[in-house]
Length: 109
Image (tube, rainbow, N blue to C red; front, top):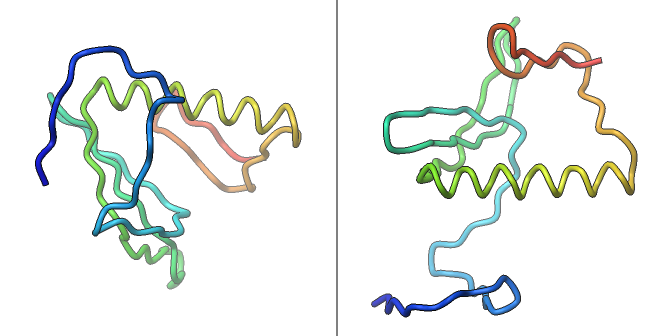
């Protein structure tokens, strides 16, 4: 498939979305992160089992973002979560859930 680049400004209402030949829809309840000098990588998976005290995560997709695209994703997610919580109430993380590392760790209720 050839991609033709055109100059100009594109607004969200002017975008037509079509499913590509490799498009998939998948459930995710686990995300792993990897960062290097030029990319942010998200690895989406599903916890499929717990053996002893260890979760078994089946990896489903690996998506690599440029820093600019990752920044836009951050903004979109922040806005969508804000709107969701305004309509449905606060999202409460389950007890025992931990996000982040070190001082930035967010713990569930």
